[in-house]
Length: 231
Image (cartoon, rainbow, N blue to C red; front, top):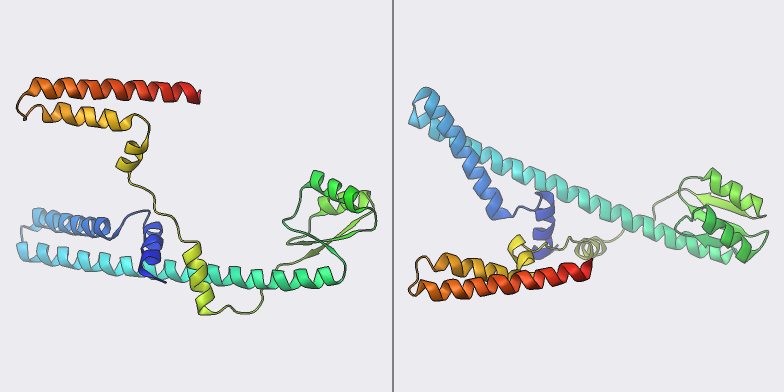
Protein backbone atom coordinates (compact mmCIF):
# COMPACT_ATOMS: atom_id res chain seq x y z
CA UNK A 1 0.00 0.00 0.00
CA UNK A 2 1.13 3.59 -0.54
CA UNK A 3 2.57 5.74 2.22
CA UNK A 4 -0.55 7.82 2.84
CA UNK A 5 -2.72 4.72 3.22
CA UNK A 6 -0.18 3.15 5.55
CA UNK A 7 -0.09 6.28 7.69
CA UNK A 8 -3.90 6.28 7.91
CA UNK A 9 -3.96 2.67 9.12
CA UNK A 10 -1.10 3.34 11.52
CA UNK A 11 -3.09 6.12 13.14
CA UNK A 12 -6.00 3.75 13.59
CA UNK A 13 -3.71 1.06 14.96
CA UNK A 14 -2.27 3.44 17.56
CA UNK A 15 -5.54 5.18 18.51
CA UNK A 16 -4.92 8.27 16.41
CA UNK A 17 -1.33 8.90 17.53
CA UNK A 18 1.16 9.64 14.79
CA UNK A 19 4.85 8.83 14.63
CA UNK A 20 5.90 12.04 16.40
CA UNK A 21 3.46 11.51 19.26
CA UNK A 22 4.51 7.88 19.71
CA UNK A 23 8.20 8.82 19.66
CA UNK A 24 7.63 11.47 22.32
CA UNK A 25 5.72 8.98 24.46
CA UNK A 26 8.47 6.40 24.15
CA UNK A 27 11.16 8.94 25.01
CA UNK A 28 9.19 10.26 27.97
CA UNK A 29 8.52 6.88 29.57
CA UNK A 30 12.08 5.74 28.90
CA UNK A 31 13.51 8.79 30.64
CA UNK A 32 10.97 8.42 33.42
CA UNK A 33 12.07 4.84 34.04
CA UNK A 34 15.73 5.89 34.10
CA UNK A 35 14.95 8.77 36.45
CA UNK A 36 13.12 6.47 38.88
CA UNK A 37 16.07 4.08 38.91
CA UNK A 38 18.47 6.97 39.52
CA UNK A 39 16.42 8.08 42.51
CA UNK A 40 16.64 4.57 43.96
CA UNK A 41 20.29 3.67 43.38
CA UNK A 42 21.95 7.01 42.46
CA UNK A 43 23.83 5.42 39.57
CA UNK A 44 23.80 7.45 36.36
CA UNK A 45 25.26 4.64 34.19
CA UNK A 46 22.61 2.10 35.13
CA UNK A 47 19.89 4.71 34.77
CA UNK A 48 21.08 5.61 31.27
CA UNK A 49 21.24 1.94 30.29
CA UNK A 50 17.73 1.38 31.59
CA UNK A 51 16.40 4.36 29.62
CA UNK A 52 18.09 3.12 26.45
CA UNK A 53 16.78 -0.41 27.02
CA UNK A 54 13.25 0.84 27.61
CA UNK A 55 13.39 2.99 24.48
CA UNK A 56 14.54 0.03 22.40
CA UNK A 57 11.83 -2.15 23.93
CA UNK A 58 9.15 0.42 23.06
CA UNK A 59 10.43 0.63 19.47
CA UNK A 60 10.31 -3.14 19.04
CA UNK A 61 6.89 -3.35 20.65
CA UNK A 62 5.63 -0.58 18.37
CA UNK A 63 6.86 -2.42 15.28
CA UNK A 64 5.40 -5.74 16.42
CA UNK A 65 2.04 -4.15 17.12
CA UNK A 66 1.91 -2.56 13.67
CA UNK A 67 3.06 -5.80 11.99
CA UNK A 68 0.29 -7.80 13.63
CA UNK A 69 -2.30 -5.15 12.85
CA UNK A 70 -1.20 -5.02 9.21
CA UNK A 71 -1.47 -8.79 8.92
CA UNK A 72 -4.97 -8.69 10.40
CA UNK A 73 -6.35 -6.00 8.07
CA UNK A 74 -4.75 -7.77 5.10
CA UNK A 75 -6.44 -11.06 6.06
CA UNK A 76 -9.76 -9.30 6.58
CA UNK A 77 -9.57 -7.66 3.14
CA UNK A 78 -8.59 -10.98 1.57
CA UNK A 79 -11.49 -12.78 3.27
CA UNK A 80 -13.92 -10.06 2.23
CA UNK A 81 -12.87 -10.31 -1.41
CA UNK A 82 -13.14 -14.10 -1.33
CA UNK A 83 -16.64 -13.87 0.09
CA UNK A 84 -17.70 -11.30 -2.48
CA UNK A 85 -16.36 -13.47 -5.30
CA UNK A 86 -18.34 -16.46 -4.02
CA UNK A 87 -21.43 -14.29 -3.55
CA UNK A 88 -21.32 -13.12 -7.16
CA UNK A 89 -20.94 -16.67 -8.48
CA UNK A 90 -23.72 -17.97 -6.25
CA UNK A 91 -26.02 -15.12 -7.24
CA UNK A 92 -25.51 -15.87 -10.95
CA UNK A 93 -26.30 -19.54 -10.37
CA UNK A 94 -29.47 -18.74 -8.40
CA UNK A 95 -30.71 -16.27 -11.01
CA UNK A 96 -30.06 -18.88 -13.70
CA UNK A 97 -32.34 -21.30 -11.84
CA UNK A 98 -35.09 -18.69 -11.54
CA UNK A 99 -34.69 -18.06 -7.82
CA UNK A 100 -35.15 -14.73 -6.03
CA UNK A 101 -32.19 -13.45 -4.02
CA UNK A 102 -32.65 -11.81 -0.62
CA UNK A 103 -29.64 -9.72 0.25
CA UNK A 104 -29.29 -8.52 2.89
CA UNK A 105 -31.59 -10.80 4.87
CA UNK A 106 -34.89 -8.93 5.45
CA UNK A 107 -36.89 -8.68 8.64
CA UNK A 108 -40.34 -10.19 9.16
CA UNK A 109 -42.38 -7.28 7.73
CA UNK A 110 -40.17 -7.01 4.67
CA UNK A 111 -40.51 -10.77 4.16
CA UNK A 112 -44.30 -10.49 4.19
CA UNK A 113 -44.15 -7.74 1.58
CA UNK A 114 -41.90 -9.82 -0.67
CA UNK A 115 -44.19 -12.84 -0.42
CA UNK A 116 -47.21 -10.71 -1.33
CA UNK A 117 -45.39 -9.11 -4.26
CA UNK A 118 -43.94 -12.29 -5.79
CA UNK A 119 -46.87 -14.55 -4.98
CA UNK A 120 -47.19 -18.06 -3.57
CA UNK A 121 -44.70 -20.73 -4.55
CA UNK A 122 -41.77 -18.33 -4.82
CA UNK A 123 -38.44 -19.71 -3.64
CA UNK A 124 -36.26 -17.08 -2.01
CA UNK A 125 -32.53 -17.49 -1.43
CA UNK A 126 -30.67 -15.84 1.44
CA UNK A 127 -27.14 -16.07 2.77
CA UNK A 128 -25.90 -16.83 6.26
CA UNK A 129 -27.29 -18.81 9.16
CA UNK A 130 -30.81 -20.24 8.97
CA UNK A 131 -33.47 -17.92 10.38
CA UNK A 132 -36.37 -20.02 11.64
CA UNK A 133 -38.64 -17.00 12.18
CA UNK A 134 -38.14 -15.95 8.56
CA UNK A 135 -38.84 -19.49 7.39
CA UNK A 136 -42.09 -19.58 9.33
CA UNK A 137 -43.15 -16.19 7.96
CA UNK A 138 -42.48 -17.27 4.37
CA UNK A 139 -44.31 -20.60 4.81
CA UNK A 140 -47.34 -18.80 6.23
CA UNK A 141 -47.67 -16.95 2.92
CA UNK A 142 -47.00 -19.97 0.71
CA UNK A 143 -43.32 -19.26 -0.02
CA UNK A 144 -40.04 -20.82 1.01
CA UNK A 145 -36.58 -19.57 1.87
CA UNK A 146 -33.33 -21.42 1.20
CA UNK A 147 -30.35 -20.32 3.27
CA UNK A 148 -26.85 -20.72 1.87
CA UNK A 149 -23.99 -20.78 4.41
CA UNK A 150 -21.19 -18.35 3.66
CA UNK A 151 -18.28 -19.69 1.67
CA UNK A 152 -15.18 -18.23 0.07
CA UNK A 153 -14.41 -17.94 -3.61
CA UNK A 154 -11.15 -17.73 -5.52
CA UNK A 155 -8.09 -16.10 -4.01
CA UNK A 156 -7.79 -12.40 -4.92
CA UNK A 157 -4.62 -10.95 -6.36
CA UNK A 158 -2.30 -8.76 -4.35
CA UNK A 159 -3.38 -5.72 -6.37
CA UNK A 160 -7.04 -6.36 -5.49
CA UNK A 161 -6.25 -6.56 -1.78
CA UNK A 162 -4.21 -3.35 -1.92
CA UNK A 163 -7.01 -1.61 -3.79
CA UNK A 164 -9.53 -2.71 -1.14
CA UNK A 165 -7.30 -1.47 1.67
CA UNK A 166 -6.85 1.89 -0.04
CA UNK A 167 -10.59 2.22 -0.59
CA UNK A 168 -11.45 1.34 3.02
CA UNK A 169 -8.61 3.36 4.56
CA UNK A 170 -9.84 5.42 7.53
CA UNK A 171 -10.30 9.07 6.79
CA UNK A 172 -8.08 11.40 8.72
CA UNK A 173 -9.89 13.22 11.49
CA UNK A 174 -9.24 16.93 11.56
CA UNK A 175 -7.44 18.33 14.55
CA UNK A 176 -9.49 19.81 17.35
CA UNK A 177 -8.41 23.37 16.57
CA UNK A 178 -9.58 22.96 12.96
CA UNK A 179 -12.98 21.73 14.16
CA UNK A 180 -13.28 24.70 16.49
CA UNK A 181 -12.44 27.14 13.72
CA UNK A 182 -14.98 25.59 11.36
CA UNK A 183 -17.86 26.01 13.81
CA UNK A 184 -20.02 29.10 13.17
CA UNK A 185 -18.88 32.06 15.26
CA UNK A 186 -15.89 30.30 16.75
CA UNK A 187 -13.47 32.12 14.48
CA UNK A 188 -14.54 35.40 16.01
CA UNK A 189 -14.43 33.99 19.53
CA UNK A 190 -10.92 32.60 19.11
CA UNK A 191 -9.74 35.80 17.43
CA UNK A 192 -11.17 37.86 20.27
CA UNK A 193 -9.44 35.76 22.93
CA UNK A 194 -6.15 35.98 21.01
CA UNK A 195 -6.40 39.76 20.70
CA UNK A 196 -7.12 40.15 24.42
CA UNK A 197 -4.06 38.07 25.25
CA UNK A 198 -1.87 39.99 22.82
CA UNK A 199 -3.06 43.29 24.24
CA UNK A 200 -1.00 42.51 27.33
CA UNK A 201 2.26 42.86 25.43
CA UNK A 202 1.31 45.02 22.41
CA UNK A 203 1.36 48.79 22.28
CA UNK A 204 -1.97 50.67 22.30
CA UNK A 205 -3.52 47.94 24.42
CA UNK A 206 -6.88 49.72 24.64
CA UNK A 207 -7.33 49.54 20.87
CA UNK A 208 -6.65 45.80 20.75
CA UNK A 209 -8.91 45.15 23.73
CA UNK A 210 -11.79 47.00 22.09
CA UNK A 211 -11.25 45.08 18.87
CA UNK A 212 -11.00 41.78 20.77
CA UNK A 213 -14.19 42.53 22.70
CA UNK A 214 -15.96 43.34 19.44
CA UNK A 215 -14.86 39.98 17.98
CA UNK A 216 -16.15 38.18 21.08
CA UNK A 217 -19.48 39.96 20.77
CA UNK A 218 -19.86 39.03 17.09
CA UNK A 219 -18.87 35.43 17.81
CA UNK A 220 -21.35 35.16 20.67
CA UNK A 221 -24.17 36.51 18.52
CA UNK A 222 -23.38 34.12 15.66
CA UNK A 223 -23.21 31.13 17.98
CA UNK A 224 -26.51 32.13 19.63
CA UNK A 225 -28.24 32.47 16.24
CA UNK A 226 -26.88 29.09 15.11
CA UNK A 227 -28.07 27.33 18.28
CA UNK A 228 -31.47 28.99 17.97
CA UNK A 229 -31.88 27.74 14.40
CA UNK A 230 -30.84 24.21 15.38
CA UNK A 231 -33.45 24.08 18.14
